[in-house]
Image 1 (cartoon, rainbow, N blue to C red):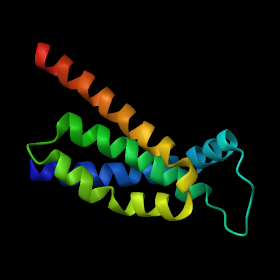
Image 2: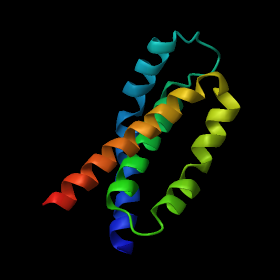
Image 3: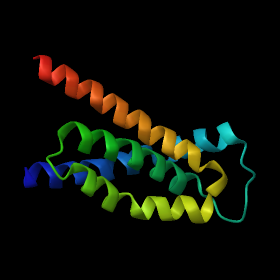
Image 4: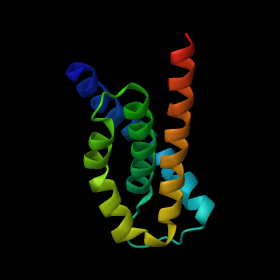
Length: 113
C-alpha cells in the first residue's frame, strides 16, 4: 500500500498543478475577488483542487491510517486558507466534504462488487 500512497500523492500534486490556474480563475469569478498586487489565482486554485482530490483519493483508497494522512497533508493548505482567505474557508470545507461523500459512494459501490 505504501507504493500506491506515494504514487497517489504524486498524482494529486501533478493533477492539482495542471488544474490550478483554471480553478483559481473560476474561484475568483465566483467570489468576485478584486485584483491585488499578487495574483493568487494559481495558489487558490491549487489549494482547492489539492484538498478535494486528496480527500477523495485517501478516503476511497486509503488504509487504516487514511484520516491521519489526510490531516497531515492538509495542514499547509489549511494554513494558506486561514492566512489569505479566511472569509471563504467554508468553500474549501464544503469541497472537502464533497470529496469525502463521493469517496463514501465509491466505497459502497466497491463493497457491492
